[in-house]
Structures are given as C-alpha cells and as structure tokens.
Image 1 (cartoon, rainbow, N blue to C red):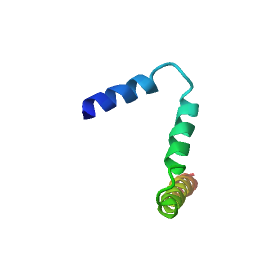
Image 2: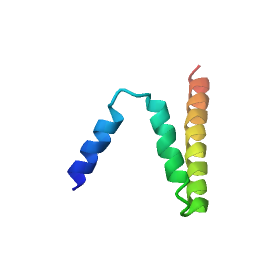
Image 3: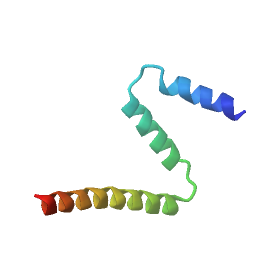
Image 4: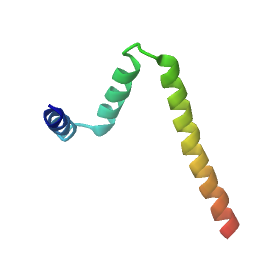
Length: 66
C-alpha cells in the first residue's frame, strides 16, 4: 500500500504543473485540516528561526573569515 501511495504522489508531483502551487496546496491542506494548530504554529516558528539562524551563522562566519 505504501508503494502505491508513493507512486501516486510521484505522478502528481511530476505531472508538469507548477511546483510552487503544489507546495502551497500541501501547506494549506496541512494547515486547514483543523487539528493541532498550536503545535503546527510552533513547528513553523521553529523552522523559521532555524532558517534565519543558519543564515546568521553563515553571515557571521563569512565576516570572520574576511
């Protein structure tokens, strides 16, 4: 059963349409299902902080090298 679901997802993902629209669809369907929005908001906040922290460390590291 897992193989079939993966195959369907692969077909859907690689059908030639815009990937950005598909990412937005995945996010909105995940967010709008109504379950555990507080936990989802915490995960999104942590992800944003992690992304900004990585770029901040890279910026500081490059400034130290230069």
